[in-house]
Length: 191
Image (cartoon, rainbow, N blue to C red):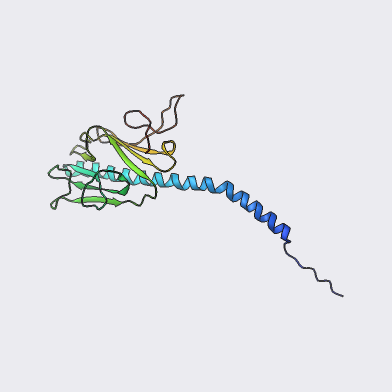
């Protein structure tokens, strides 16, 4: 006589396994989501930093003015959120607009998926200009990269008066809010 023994999971074992998997996933998903958002902020930060550094270098190499501006279409400069895109071009007549006889150096149309990029600069204007020495012509300021988490997780990029581009960092004071600071030493803000 042969005894038939089946091997497999009972319904209770299956339910316990699914409950354990659900608990593990609920603990891991929020941190994974935060990691994805942090990577998006860093990616956008590095992309703009690359364009700014290349524009400054091109201005010095070509001994001319290079303008970087917000642009959704890589044709016209406009004001507003830099998250839609931007472009860098040789600005022969220093008018802050890409003309037919001027060379487009780089452009980037953004698909920032919830990332707002703003530019707070010293003086008026919405463009950033580098002269033949690589100096930011009255355009020093801070680019702020924000997502739905607010200023506590924001990133920043500072353009100094001499044209150097560096990452914004939080204050090292013991009373620090751990929010990155702009070019004036104040915490960045997100709308």
